[in-house]
Length: 503
Ligand code: BG6
Image 1 (cartoon, rainbow, N blue to C red):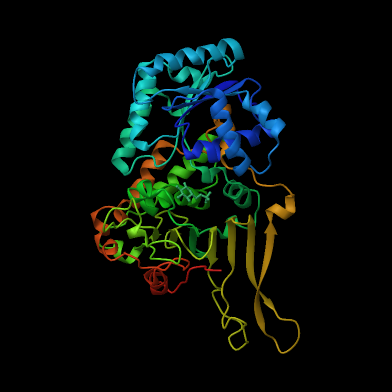
Image 2 (image 1 turned 90 degrees about the vertical axis):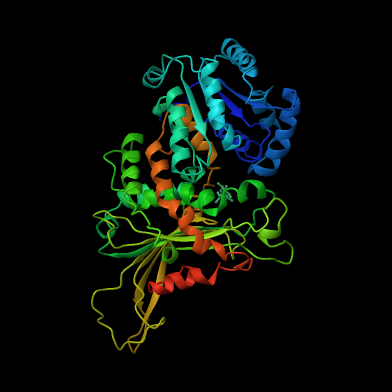
């Protein structure tokens, strides 16, 4: 694997939560395993005046809290590469100073003119920052050349956080702005779910084995569930969340990415181009939901009052009478040869019964029942089920039917389990770390392509635009905190003769 290139990581939004809670702890972890480039600098950009030392001290407190292991000496060594630059990213004036600071790094620290810009700011600032990066000529090598021959030339790349736009049009507009300044090869649309071990492990599970792929299609699979539910509420992010909602926050981004890995065809090779080409095809094959079917294919919810928190709609920062969803369950069909007739159900929610991120692949029962009169622990043959758990545990479980020892003949469902944490004895890395290293290496395999993002928006828009009015209007407090969501979501499944995997 190619070593990451020397570079400066320029974080716009340095005072934000993401920088302190995720990015810096992830980089600290990467340094601990020797994955960072030898010549490397972090330059945090934010408005407040602060010295390098003051910022380092703030970050040290956060790393102690969020990194898996804290070692004061190791931190002190790592912190030397962290610097701060005070400036308003929305003002042109600061960019000349920024340019000068970056040039100084190149002279003193051999960072070779390589820059990795990270937009960790409010999405409303994305386009103006990209424009200012161009105006200040911070993308010095022009476009295409820097990616092709990065060992000889300097490169400038950009990582953009989600939400990437708020609908198809705004995502396309952001893509156009980015495309005017950077080549597609230098644009890294990040989704931290793609840095999770188990999501990547889907590729290996599906394509390094022979037993799954022959049955991985509509002939054998009844349906797939992709779930990401959390026990926490929206916390202090009400302003962000109320203008975003669960579909934009989770389904359009994270859950559709998981879907792409489950539904894609085998890539020709494990390269960014090949993987992304297949993911794009899978996302584009999602059948558009018509306004007439939104009500039967989607359920939205808002959590009600709990013992220690107000109902969502009464939280400070939430608009009066807000109809923003804290829960969403949607059904999508995929119109291609492999998946025609096999629905995918997506579900996400705050303040739910448990924290759980998983993929459930429910196989069809056998075509003929050879054991009609035989007692079954569950009353009937259930069909095989593969559960790929991403969080809280990294596990894969396969359910199948088995004879109960003894006589007379009776049947029970049993489960085989592979536990990644126990099996390999290694702790999963914070998802952002390997993704940042990939960007420094110029590997986009685990980043989203322009078309994937735009097609993802197209798939969920009917559940967000005016077509969703019927399912949106009566959502206030329609599920209790700590529950499995609104009853209507269970009814949606029951109408299809199915049930959510709530175990
Ligand atoms: C973020 C969302 O992208 O993912 C949050 O904005 C959510 O609302 C979080 O809580 C969940 O991430 P994870 O890794 O804990 O599943």
